[in-house]
Amino acid sequence: MAGGQGLALVGVLTVLPTPMLVVNILFAVALFTFPSVMVWLDRQGRMPTALPWFHLLVVTPVLAFLLLMISFQPNSYCNTILQHSEFRAFYVLFLPFLPLLAHMVGSNKVGRPWLFGCILTFSLLFVYDLTVAYEVLHMVYQNQAAEGVVYSGARAWECNHFDGASMQVAFRAKWRANQAFLVLMPLVLIGARLVQRRRRVDDASQNEKSEV
Image 1: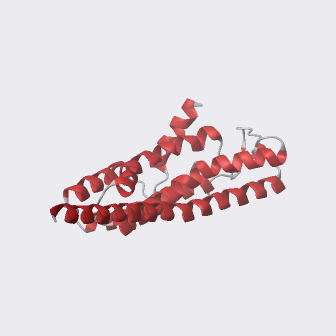
Image 2 (image 1 turned 30 degrees about the vertical axis):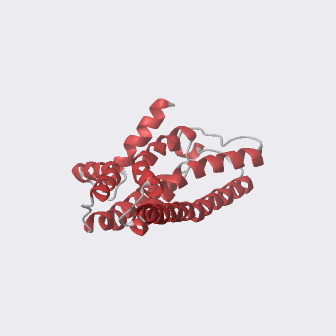
Image 3 (image 1 turned 90 degrees about the vertical axis):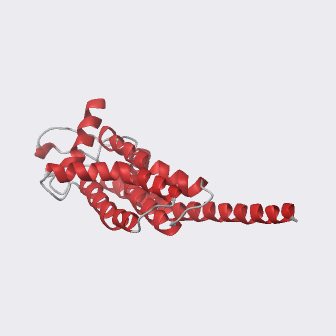
């Protein structure tokens, strides 16, 4: 299983919309470093305006395209459902966004909360779709069909086998899981910023009273 996860993760660099390995590597570096760099710059008060916009308008759409291509597998004859050993390799893509998420939730002051919130919501939505939502799909399908998807791993005319009606139910559950994330993630971020704002107001009022 570990080998399958490694191959799946290496495949990330091969499905980007460019044949140039250098560009693929640069994208991977940007994906894994930009969130932490933005947090550091924001805390230092030196965030350039272009950097978060570049992430939102360039890095996030490319990441979305990449993960959708992995999920839909347009060049696959079978259009197979991803196995656990394949989609679980992509849980690592949550890691680059943890510093930005912690900054949004826990920092007393955030320079561009709405922009950072959009980056987190839209980027993590596609990572969530390929990981947690796929867990939901497999779990619901197994509950419906009383067995998991049967993978042959063989030739094109021996594609994996699944019950169509049960798979439709599973995909609807996966879609609802994505909808839940799309609703809850902004609410969590907005709620966290409101709590931090309330704390700043309380601290300011206490300082005024102590000075008096």
